[in-house]
Amino acid sequence: MAKMKLTILIWEEDGVYVSRCPEIEVASCGDTPPEALDNIREAIDLYFTNARALGISCELEPILTSPHKFTSVIEVEG
Image 1 (tube, rainbow, N blue to C red):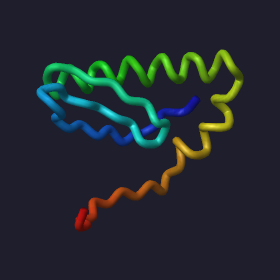
Image 2: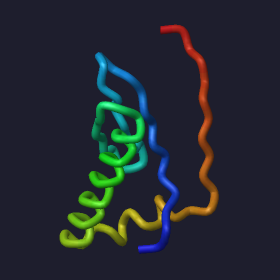
Image 3: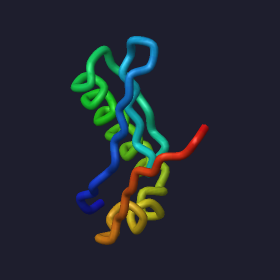
């Protein structure tokens, strides 16, 4: 699989830092932001290892390797 740039969101929730990759719906956590980032990286590696074993990694590649990726932050009332 080609190199990918994935979005990682990290936020604090009840004293724990939650990390989430929205492109593949993988999440993890840690006691600090750097730990949460390390843990999500490990979770993503495991996700792709399993995807390759199940033969579904080729289905994900077009989505994750597109050169045209856009992210935006918007504010809404909630």
